[in-house]
Image 1: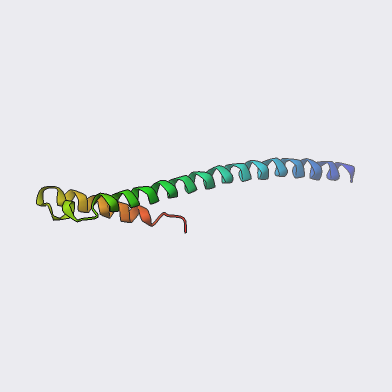
Image 2: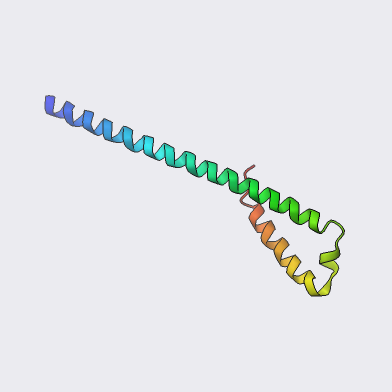
Length: 82
């Protein structure tokens, strides 16, 4: 009986360390995602202010490139924190 209790206590301690480690990793990832979301928002805002008058989209030579950059930004907006 004492051996079983000893084994259970050891398993409980190991599980506690594992859970603490996973929580720390989760907090790091949440911080990373929050920073990425902020960077994505600032890029989206900057892209809108760069072409607020529509000069880039209207230009034939650079318009296609700017349109593709806007498509990429729209795809990135799907990963924004809400």
